[in-house]
Length: 87
Image 1 (cartoon, rainbow, N blue to C red):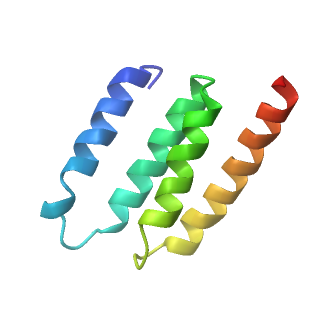
Image 2: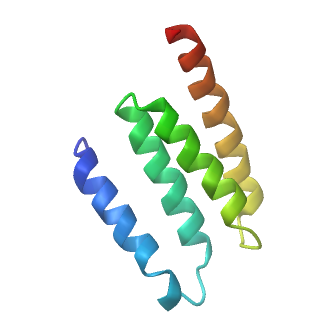
Image 3: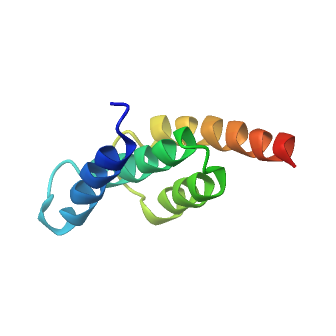
């Protein structure tokens, strides 16, 4: 979208609807991870890592969990490498 503020607003709005979502419960976990990826796009790797790790711990028992965990693992490795490179 190239508009990170709007993307984060939309993802937060999605996460705020958690109590209303009954079927597609994976949306919360994916929205949380996507918000972490937006933070990473903005070079805020610490917040990206925190957000993505929170999603990994907080959301369980949803469909497509293993697919999301592969994505989380790859992103965390990339972000931690970039942080180590910066320091």
